[in-house]
Image (cartoon, rainbow, N blue to C red; front, side):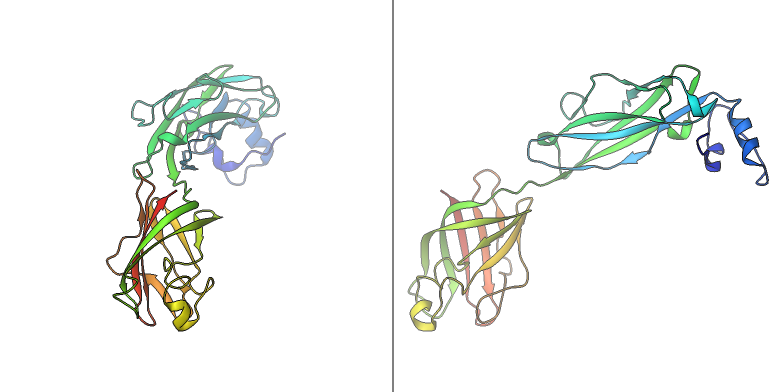
Length: 287
């Protein structure tokens, strides 16, 4: 006989409330439950899955479970029907689809649950305004009833920005300050934004050439490893911390732009060296 948790007895619906004293023996609990119909419901009332907005189709699963009831150890096959609540903001065929194409699911004979699979289309996820899918169990066959507190599942469809800015760029840097201005006031060169995974990137010469081909090479002995910076891109925003040149910290330039243009893919990075105040704005145009 499957173990019946006492807490389930207090939340069954449709007149199925069973009272018992804490001193009752387990056998008495099973005897009381044996007089009730089968009770079904969602395993959870809320869920908030998150998917990369990379255009992929993502499958989400939730269980509809047999909570208890008549001869719980040997239940018949039970078909459970559900509907999409009219208050849902997610649209079938656009934001989601049921994998089996049906709004019913069967708990097979002598099984405790059935898995409801839903496909979510990540290309339509709005990261700033998640859509909501609300499902209500409406009925079940074979003498089964729906537990009122297990009848509804609310799914909030969250998105995680997909980052893919790695590649070759032509970068033009306009310098706000360095030791040799007004010479070398701007510079254009080809560079690689190297993808390190999970939205993390690396640029070997974050100065846009000042430290690798500009006047700092001869004057201060800078080179390819003098201004090697890692940064992250998330939903179009560029950020970094704990990065340095060979003299001190490199931080985002106050009031500067650090972002990716969603239409053109152009990356703008505004940087500032705390030790000697070198700074510039580097504009990366995809090649």
